[in-house]
Length: 380
Ligand code: GDP
Ligand code: MN
Image (cartoon, rainbow, N blue to C red):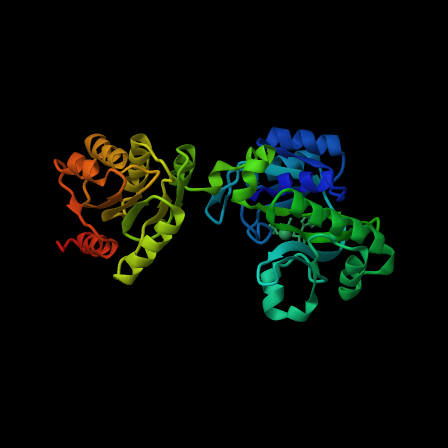
């Protein structure tokens, strides 16, 4: 889950990282009021969950409150990389003397948290990594010792930061590391971290990516979710407690268990098909959940066939069968269904489905081959 810049920076501030004074607005009038309160030139920044807003015209300076109102009315409603701007951040404008990059990520290969810094702030770090990789300095953090002051000094020296800023820089890097660890993030990034006209460090932009699997421990962070980040199908799936991810293929997959779902997708690929989604209905799913899942799958008009692969255990095949029957009764089904049910109550499940016009299979490879053929309009 991605956090907006203003959300990320508010969290940074709680950890002692200096940020510009400012607030969010959803209307030009609100933007004007914030600019009036700040009483100085401001920067109006579109709050959309993509990078490169500056280049896309989503960040503009305004000298007066009236100008802030005019600029906000230009930016609100703007389309940036397919996302509509619904909020702007009105911050006191920063007087930028130099721009630094500072980011915390998980280095999976090393199994440690990595802190990266670069003197080439303001540009995307991927670009720096591709063009001038020697401009990126990295340290790895021992999970029990945490980020040590000497490591922060190494980062600071490595990017040529003037000595007078090392204490502040250390505090900011350690704060950012704490943010990363305590919020179960996958990324915490300040780009740019600037040296301003008062010769102080300040976080001008902020980005936090949270690990969805850690969100249950952070109700207050989960509440910050912007529903526009996900497709309507993904939002509906979350409401029904289904793990669902949109993909581009033509075979809708309904499976119980994440591992089986992935294996099913692999087998679909193996037989020349392409999955339209990842969908795990979870253990012990009841009929309603199966119907909800099918309704989400069938909304995607790229779906040419639906493959249902259930390995009954905690999930009972008769419950799944009832969900399928209910879906066929209540939804407008125009594509073929291929069903493989094995395990607990599979016989009962088959009987429930006997009346429905479905393609059945007993093995996974048979089911997938039938689904691939059905998606092509052939009968296997
Ligand atoms: P991004 O383009 O989405 O990464 O948004 P940023 O917040 O990082 O802004 C992009 C660039 O706009 C920064 O690197 C700065 O060069 C510039 N910028 C952002 N805020 C200000 C500001 O308050 N004053 C000035 N002068 N430039 C700014
Ligand atoms: Mn940025």
